[in-house]
Structure formats: C-alpha cells, structure tokens
Amino acid sequence: MRSRAWGMEFYRGADCCLLVFDVTMPNMFKSLDSWVDEFLIQASPRDPENFPFVIIRNIIDWNENRAVRFDERLAF
Image (cartoon, rainbow, N blue to C red):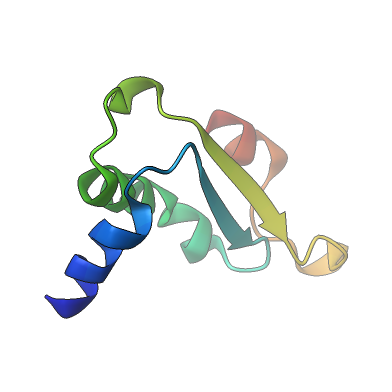
C-alpha cells in the first residue's frame, strides 16, 4: 500500500513512460502489459488511450541470448 501511494506521487504529471526490458528474459517482455496497466492506474493521465509509452530494449549486445523476437517486439 505504501509503494502504491509513492507511485501516485512519482507518476503524477508524467508526459510519457519509459519501460525497459532485458531481451534475454522473455518473461520481462511479457510483463510489459501489466506495467503499462499499473502506470495508467497510478498516473491517471487525462487521455490514457493515447498516452505515450517508450519501450527500451536492454542487453542488446547479447545476440546469442536474445529470447524476444523482433516481430514480438514490433507487435507490442
């Protein structure tokens, strides 16, 4: 409960949301939807349908360990 109250203060007035995921961990990518939902709940933007989100891939130099395909990222 305490972290939720902190989130409301932290997210309020945001102009966009950056979400970072590790390309070697597919579960991290799959959890992005829940992070989007949580952000929208906490931030309560005026126009949630058009609120801008930026998805950032991390650990992209580990080509042999990538677990999230390009088409999956593009679909998100």
